[in-house]
Image (cartoon, rainbow, N blue to C red; front, side, top):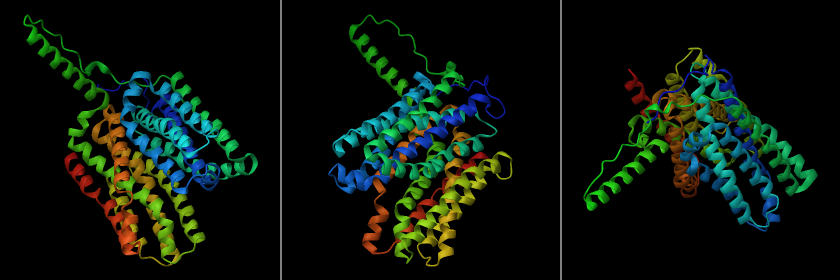
Length: 432
């Protein structure tokens, strides 16, 4: 598909370009959390101010995430055409503009269009561009760099929750969106630093070349040849810029299953865990404490997984297998637990494992497919996760409605989390 990576700017740890890419990915993760959090905290206020219904405002966040997944396959093309730095700068402007313009909306439709078209598109493109830039720069310390960048999500949750509440109490909801949008605009600076620090680029010497066309004296043959040439060129364009060939690669599908199932299970836990804990007899305050402590464990898992694999303490394959088993068992058990500390332990193990898995699945993608296919792989996987959540995100809730209990629902989630063990074992076997 593409050529090898130029190593002229790579040091043993990625060098300056690598850590600039880490800063850009960290900043993107931090700002995306701000975009989501400002909607989540202001749900009741926006419902009243925009004379809308709660589910419509909540649906805007889901539609934004869905949009980001649908545009993700274009991330690699944007990065190659305009450069990672300029792409990140543009996405920063789009995310900021969505929130700032949101302060002037008069109804939920206008807010939905702004978030979908601007914030959703920017989120999907910037995620692929920044993750590819980090993967392109790092070899030895990729897991560590990826883990550091992902802490942006955790820091964003810690910072934006009280900050948005302070803004609301002081300036109202429109002033809050203006201020949050101004904060998000600072992400443009990380893209500008990427522009100033030249990033390693893919060698295009092995990219598709246009074949010279022979002349035809017969007009019918010439037309047929031109049509075949056009179709061939179009096919080459899609295969080259969207890495469509990945969809025919069995190894890609194996790592895609691992990523999709892990993200699906984690998202379902986020959505349903508090309700499940309450149905098991815990108070809302106790359920909140489970989430808080588990969030700290998630941060610890994100940070600790890098040194474990990069220093050779444990291979990525083994660490992923251990965390898959640990999280699956915890999902199974959580639906049956009614005591405080066992439930706390279950929540901690689930989010600690997720912190490890979300980083290590990116590492496996790079190990299995190579750096030249990272953008395409990240883009197509993001699209598949979106389709999976849209198609089956309702399933645990439906199981609860049908059974009146979260036991079967969390057994389903645990089973989904256990599925990646099969493709993981297949990949381990194929690596030998």
